[in-house]
Length: 314
Image 1 (cartoon, one colour):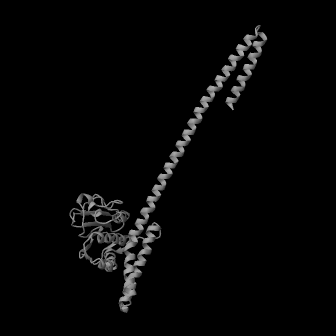
Image 2: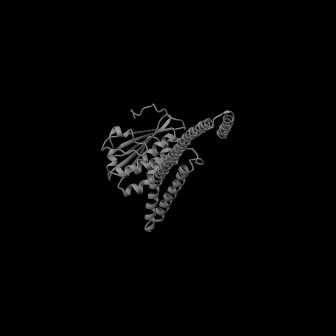
Image 3: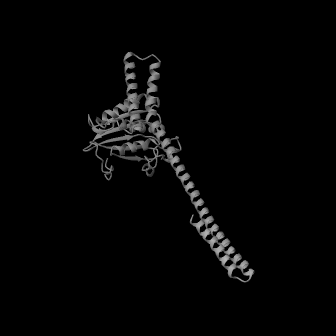
């Protein structure tokens, strides 16, 4: 609007000046010259204004294109993150339910043969029911973000023994054994019992991938002053000691394991996340071709442990 008024003013000025020149001038050539000069000035002003506006339009258009391109990149980044989150969520679900489903399937196969005694049938059905309950609690923890899952006090030794008992048939299929050792009759701690079972199931599944048949998994439960220490040990392929420090990072696999078995590097990541959720500490030791040892330190009463403490003397 402002530019239009300027051009109207210029046009009126030209008409006025041309009229005055024609009135006072004695020669018509002066009128023609002055009018031509004024019209040329008006044309130059219009041309300059057009060039300026064109530059502004092009700049605005470029800024809009850059804004659109930036928005596209941000949206692509968000979609990529969402896809990775969905993929990670699927891997977490798969790692959390694969073994209990296999256990349920195994006991189901045994029952379907119809050769079990009534006592054995009752035992197998009870184990199936326990794994179904475990799956239900796991889905609540993973899907509902543990909002309605209660943090309770439970016996860690009993929970570990429960996992060993539930996994017995599954381990037997792979010709493996699991031994539980504890210096205490009861090892009480406050936390999420289903999470502890999830951690052990993931470790067992990891061991099955990399252990030779006929070997044994050893789990020790110790009652320390203010914490519960669970030591998980297998004698699988292991990995270099410098790589052991990286275990538990998302999607990380040791070179020794990566060359033998296809995996996603999610199992130990879940274990580490469970430890962090409990305010605990996970430490992994390993030697190539000698298996690995996982130290899991849980606070007894829900506190967060001092990460600076060392496990060197354990």
